[in-house]
Length: 514
Image (cartoon, rainbow, N blue to C red):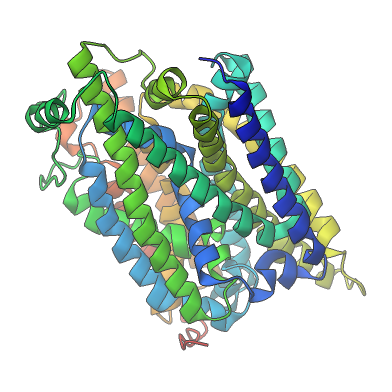
């Protein structure tokens, strides 16, 4: 399972191009907050779409989607329903409002609508939520890096891999700002997709299997719970079903609306286009491309399962390594390097955007207002304060990623469900506030605080109460244990209700297409 000279050459070339893009982008990174955090709104639609695609996939998709399809079925595809509905909601209402507000972060819009305290509270919630979510993604990305570079996935070697990936992403993000993030992510989306395509081709032409037998194996195959292996839509009303159609429509629509409209991590890219119309177009294009790429990764998981069934092989005890083990043991020289480059692309495309967006929130939502309060005549240089913020955030993310090693094992969840569950805590509170600000004339700073606490509290109760009850001798019906989508729905409803209870705020900003 070692890499050859050609594989290492592919990796070195890939990393060299990524760093070169960061250096080129750094030429215009120091001319102000608008240039560093919004790229002066000069990024084309296709580049933003590829950047959003790369970030939304992440290492959780690269490793987790094959793992999920191998152990289960294709019902994860139904989440594209929620992805499309959530993207349309954001494209039609959120993005035009953000462009009208003309602020570097989406929390500037909340500040204009609900007051300074509300904006800062939302930005703080974003920073905490992004630390958890991106820390979890960094941990997942470090798994294959630790295996390939350091020869194992024990705690020490995984920690070293976490530090390696965080350092690489911090270097080019600090150098070039959001422009470096977008253009490197565009490259990484191409590399990631190429790696997935190469892997699927290897499985389809694998001499150890044949396509007819593979199809019959999948057509007649069943999951561990007795379901069909090729099942795509789950219409059950079971609250514990992770990817039911109803959960996709009601829960994951809100989850995606929060991801693209209330999370600076992805929303920042949508604000770098010349107009709201272009920003909306980039989001819809990213959603369409993402559905195809995720389908490829799920198909890889099914093909791996069918291959093992035909060969009479048993899966590794660590299902996170299924896809990676196949690549490292079966891919020819050069393709292995491309596969590892794809994994690094998935890792760094998630991490660099988190670093950039969190740096933007720190500088624009906290440092700049503090300078005004202190009466500073000359604001601190954008490049300096931003780069310091990004480095501090990188260290914090690495520490959270190390903590996630134990958290994920204790949760006993697959990588995909673990990543989604972590994100819901911040998203439930934030989305309730944004829905209030955009669609009503209600809300104020106090009701915002209540919403940001109440939403995550409901999510925590629904996630941990069944576990606590069962461990203390009680019983919680399995079918009533809410999955990620239902937790998101409940948390968002409570958050919206609490924020709506605030008094009449400022008028909602116009949602024209300026």
